Length: 127
Image 1 (cartoon, rainbow, N blue to C red):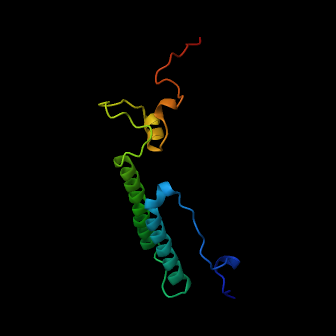
Image 2: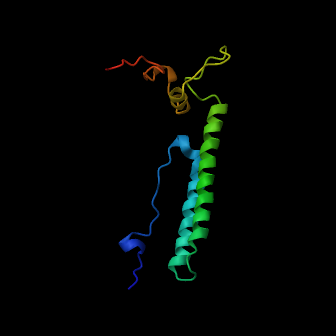
Image 3: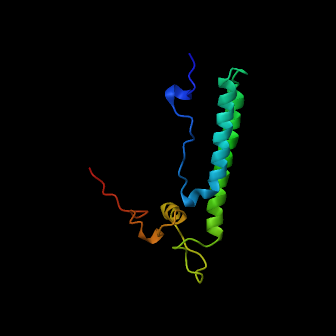
């Protein structure tokens, strides 16, 4: 017996997802991904067509790649607009960063305050 509520009694109202302001460039591509998957599920659930899983996986992969591109585009816009609080001073020609410092900087943190272990440290030989 089919019920009017899909998913074992789940309500048909949309579920709202909070997208942080820093990720707003991804919101439309996430919405597109969800809408495409819902449409694919609805057409298969209605019994109109057989499910072509290879085609569905290709569609999801392409739409997920769009989400990732939008994430990178948002980060690149943030980088080019100079909104990093802890960016090097304009008089500095270049600054050497370790990988963990770059990750902290790209996430809006201060790379000089990471308190990470030194890159090279002596190791005592135990016999």
